[in-house]
Amino acid sequence: MAISNKVIITCAVTGAIHTPSMSPHLPVSPEEIAEAAIGAAEAGAAIVHLHARDPITGKPDQTPEGFEPFLKVVKQRSDCVINITTGGAPWMKVEERIKPAAVYKPEVASLNMGSFNFGLFPMLDRFKEFKHDWEREALESSRDLIFRNTFKDIEYALRSLGEAETRFEFECYDTGHLYNLHYFLQRGLVKPPLFIQTVFGILGGIGPHPEDVLHMKRTADRLFGDQYKWSVLGAGRNQMPIAAMAAAMGGNVRVGLEDSLWIGPGQLAKTNAQQVSRARQIIEGLGLEIATAQEAREILALKG
Ligand SMILES: C[C@H](N)CC(=O)CC(=O)O
Ligand SMILES: [Zn+2]
Image (cartoon, rainbow, N blue to C red; front, top):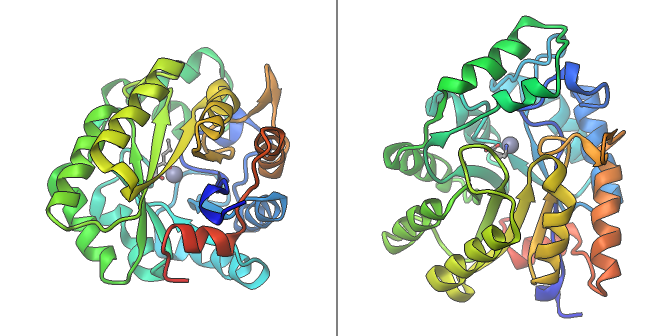
């Protein structure tokens, strides 16, 4: 199979949205995050998307120091592509959010392509008991939360990280975010191939319906033609259905406990690798092949 047709699996191992009380399987400590990333890579993920947390409370930690312990171990034990978050947690300021990527100069960093309401509070219907106060506070305060990513913030991140040849996973939660990316392409602030991660099913962004997936794909095709590599992530129970749809349409996929705690209806995933294996089964079931980390580097023109 031509390398360009191979499917890149990204695994987002812990994130900042889900909290420790929601699942005993959510990686929190640096050791757990490192093992989760390495396990995901061994299961077939070419790229691992990483956030850091306070080892005790699990609260999102966006200090470079928070990333150091697990980055070292992942680099020692795996050749997977490392993607460091610049989203951090949606209540953080952009200056704080881009620091780890600015320090570690990864091959890939996430970049959120617009400001929007980031509704986490619906998870309060599902999860009632919390060990730590910050968990409930984070969900409740999201009723009045804007995930800020202004044109100035985005340009600041592009200029700060672009110098180190870090390339981006452009998180697009709605159609307007694709147009924002197109604006930066026209200004020459981003270079093809653009790795576009279309995000479905987060309250405040576009929904998880097949029509929404088609709409984002058609819009990206019209705006970027062959200058982009399409990837999808579905939040929560939408993760695997959206991965299957996109793989069948020639897209790449993102899974991981950052985006969904589940492996089936009411069934918590025990590991990130479990979700990677499930996505791989779906992809290979379609007669497709997954890309290795080296192939992903070639497809996405990464610095290696
Ligand atoms: C929906 C995901 N949490 C998107 C994300 O991963 C954002 C980031 O880290 O920059
Ligand atoms: Zn993330």
